[in-house]
Amino acid sequence: MKQLTSRNIVSEIIIIFLFFGVINGYSFEIKSSDINHSIFFGGTLQADYRQISNHARADSRFDIRRARLHLKGDISKQFAYLMAFEFQGNETQNLVDAFADYRYHPFLSVRLGQFKVPFSREWQINDCHFPFAERSIGFSLQPGRDMGLMISGQFFKDTFSYRVGMFNGDGIDGSSRGNQKDDPEMAVRFVIHPFSLTELPVLSGLFSGISYTEGRIDLSNISVNAKSTGMIGTKRSLYVLNANTKFGALLDVDKRKRTSLEGGLSYGPCSVYGEYQRYQYMSLKPVRGTAGHASFYSWYVNVVIHFCTSSIHNNLLKQQSKKNTAKWQAAFRREYFSGDKQWIIDNAYNAAKEANAYSLALSYIVRSDYRLLLDYTVTDISDPLRIRVNPDGTVEYMSSETAFTLRFQITI
Image (cartoon, rainbow, N blue to C red; front, side, top):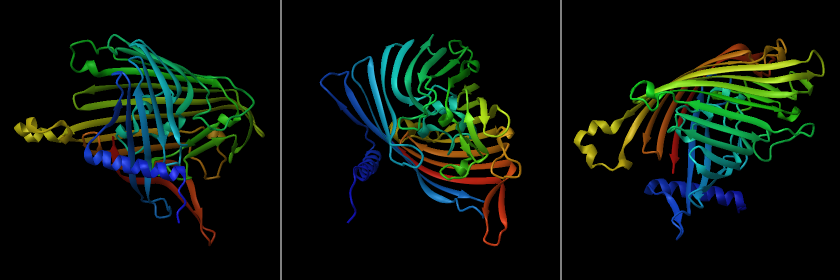
């Protein structure tokens, strides 16, 4: 007989919960006699099939990409909270988000707990709304989620917004920590929509922003694991750097710095936006060789277009409820990643100095509950990467990757 653990039970509950919630089109909300006190239950389930064209790779597979449960609510007009749990378990631990918000005014809110570090436009987009199957290769350079305190706000109807926080710098709760240094990591993000209050129809959607993080770290915080779309969920990587990397052991490190510049324009159903990111480890000291910095760069440009299918119904549209509308979304991405060649061993065939990728994605979205996504991504790799050694002693390499992803998503 199958032994039921708490994790098995909760996993089964979330599947049943998502299934019946989406089928019936319900949101699960509990309200107390106090009109300001409510609890909302929701979640996201993403089921994938990914096909890799390279015949030498056994990476084509079905996968549960995410199975996430959300619990959020308001205690009063000023206090709110959110907790998110991940049951997929392959890349994250169970607790994803756990934070409380104090909303004093539009220009001042305070958040405490575990949440997304304010860095990069790409990272701030919710997983269930992201237009591609995976984020860009440069996402590996971003801070992800962390424990900390953040203040945020906006001025002049979101013309200018800011987020400033201090974090542990170790990642999500339960991540490995070193004992050499324990300095907090500072993170800031500023975004401006300079023409948002004007009557100019095109320029009103223009925006730009900058993100920055800096903090002293120890060897346990050295972690670069750059992956292409087809490598997500596998042990393959384009570039790996850590304290005991296959490129050589490291003795010490000083600071970690990240910088991101973003900008774009939204007009009608179209959006064009992009980012440039720079990631640095300062004063890396290897066991052998000369001390130096490690620098990584990446950029991407996205074009996203929405097509509302309900518009073809003309007068019938007025008779349809909002929940029956649907739309198509098309997206194109061009991206680039550059790894520091100083930390690559020549002729090791286990890291690439550069990678260029092109993605084309098409989504069919019914309300916000159902989403069917097709993603086709081609990645060109500057240096051949060893895939495997055959029994006869021959070696197989890859210098490009073609990944096709089919995803079905339900969200409530």
